[in-house]
Length: 448
Ligand SMILES: [Fe+2]
Ligand SMILES: [Fe+2]
Image 1 (cartoon, rainbow, N blue to C red):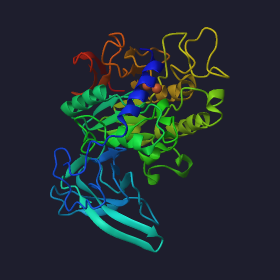
Image 2 (cartoon, rainbow, N blue to C red):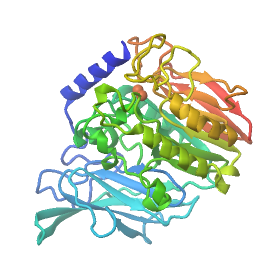
Image 3 (cartoon, rainbow, N blue to C red):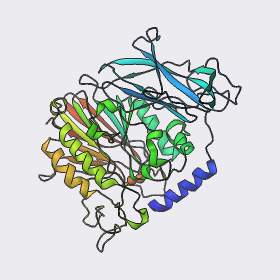
């Protein structure tokens, strides 16, 4: 099946399936007990999903979860496994806490690097009758205590990458099962989690209530998110931060205020760098009616990247690994480089959208090369590929596979989990083929 047809089919299937809840009224959370003191007077449990750990970092962690009705959520967290030292942090920020009926975000800040924390989620059911008519009318707390470790220079350097999951439950489920088996310190979700999402309910389904066995996938394993072109499409995805929160404001300068998901941090001997390649069509492409602004976004990230690569903790790491959705190199001279004005096509080039991102490559590639980056992990092309380093491009590029599991696509198109781990001083990258269930490739990298 061609890429576009597959996306259409997936959208049709998604519409048929609706937004069926995995956690039905009265059904216990997987691997946990039913929420304590559940107030079901308004039609079922208030806590509607497991927590999702967002934006892995040394001193902060995002905890997001879905709710079924108007609520004010919180996290109880501490260093003790029984939460006897727990402090309570409410959703939202300064001035007002948040009240929402779909997704609540709690930001834990001031954490210690390389440290394990325990936590549980809870929410107050809110009656809102107006600015002077607000009442707490119920409370639920998940009895299950989860835990996570923060990033830091002493942390186990071990990551997994998934990409182009495109709301396809079977390959996504297999990826999550493989990650559970591997047990990495963090996972990079490298874009195209979505197709075209018009509602927050659709986003809840993708990130909080995926129709897979392992639907508590990010309750104890922190995730990072590098958006893909599809994660910008649709009215809801224009504000994806309502589902996948931005990094904490104090983690970036005022100049970088709007770079909500870029990351640069240490995980043991690896410096992890997250970039966002944006759309795979030009801002000026008439199909987009002038409603995108990726050119300026890419330039802002270039300024940010230049500075973070000079940071001492990043410079000192033995390995520098970067992540973005659209590849920054393609060996095929006919591959569309994403800068063909005015409408993303020209004689001699395939397709009418970017197969790779020449603009980003020209801005970010030399900076990564100068900093000694050994590896860039990307996705987007729905076909696994390894591009060996060259004298001009000293970083290797691994392109993760797509969402095809069956004979709807050629055998060389298969979903991947890309695992990176520092073992005996070497960065070993293992490419797991989720279609055949075997290791497809293993690559070794020397310290810089
Ligand atoms: Fe994709
Ligand atoms: Fe893509």
